[in-house]
Amino acid sequence: MVWPTSDQPVSLARPLAVLPEPLPEPLRVLQPVTPAAVQPGAPAVGETETVCNELFCVDVPQGWEAEIGETYLSFNHELDPVHTFLTVGVVDMEAIVEGAGGTWPVPPQETTLAFWSLLEDADVGEFERSARRVGGAIKSWGTHTDGEMWYLLYPIEGSRAVGIEMRAPNDSWETHADTVFDSLTVR
Image (cartoon, rainbow, N blue to C red; front, side, top):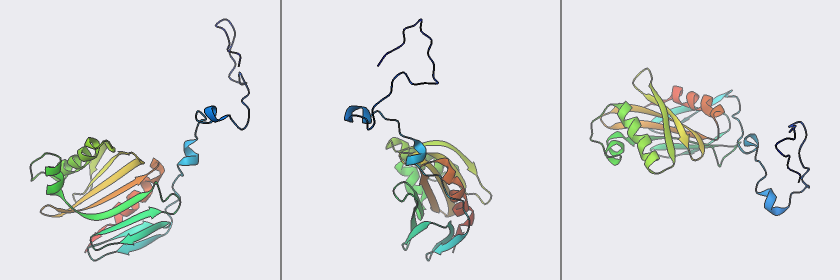
């Protein structure tokens, strides 16, 4: 490979060297990875399916494969089942707050911050922002080791709440999270 000297012009229109194909093993490690190839974008929401257990129901866009438990619903998307994760479950806000070192009771906004602090303390997530929704639920945005993450905390009574967590490789999946968040019905 010929490297230009400081007095030679550099053109980005043509490569300085042509690498052999396939790349030798040591160079294969340095080969750039295209995020779109690894991280599929979300399909359009389109039609939804209502999925319920005895405690709550949500509308889920097509492509999400469900596991239904007594106190939770868990999903992975068929497009990328390893990197897409959606769960709806009963949560104990008092346990979240106290687990993060706080004292109960606190408002739902502070419970949401405590939830994210637990993820941050474990080095698996990072809080970005949150917003109060009509009805008192708190939607929050952040990142997770899997990519993007959205969390909805929907207080029910006392320290009981429904938590909806969605993780996906990129922010194109937020429309799926919002569809589920907006459809939550507590029985």
